[in-house]
Image (cartoon, rainbow, N blue to C red):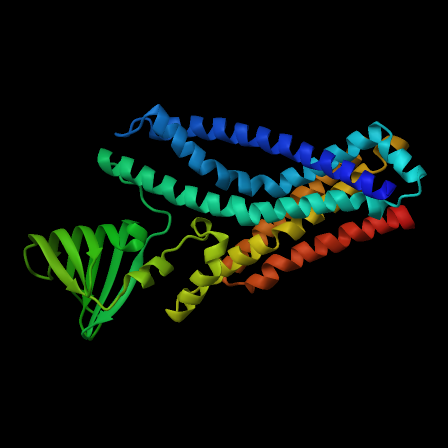
Length: 362
């Protein structure tokens, strides 16, 4: 009975501390990103303060999601140090309750935060990222200052025996419409027979509709046409999957996107890595909590130096950096996504548990 009451009390303390931390960090993220948004986009047509506030609000969940592992480390350390300084953990130990019993509510809280981030924060962040990118693109287009996409579409198609490469500086509608397009036509020997530069290329049923097109043929004077068609066997579903950015795909849609991408023969390493990264997030937060416990449980009783607390912060930060770095390897295909994501998390959890066992049970 006493253990259950203490567990509920510790759990409430942990959740309360986490809530204040998260609210404060969200506020800081919002203010910092609003300032940066105003600096970058205030000169664009369509920009206004209310629109910028909405734009920042849509971007905040994605940035906040990236800070959750580090925040969980600080929440765990803050909660445990506060309980130690008020001698509540000393009384708990004196009552015969082991470290594994009173650390369980903190681990359970971290697990629930991870599930909340995976099932709620991530879908909201993915939606907000898509909408904010669309809003920024519309502002830049209205101002004639289109921004070059970080994910440049380069598509090769062979339709009707004709080999064509299509490139663009940006895209809209999940790739169904390309902007600032360049198209190279090749003959059977691989020589360029025609270059087309178009303002837009919109994918219709069985063809690309090109607008404001300049055509250049070897040895001929360039000509310009208002619009023309380019036959294709590509489908909109293919483009949507091939141009999907992992951070704009909600957790619930990742498996479907992976299956569809594989059916088209598209590399899905980045999406698989994102899926395993989100799936392992609750376990990663538990690992962060165990690391926090290794440097916080005896802080008051043995007057450990600040260097020990700093060591815990550095350890948690190194773990986060390693997971991000290995995640990049998984996205590129250098390491299998499952291995890239889960190995650092499992190792960190085992290491934290081992240190606690050594400290508390000898």
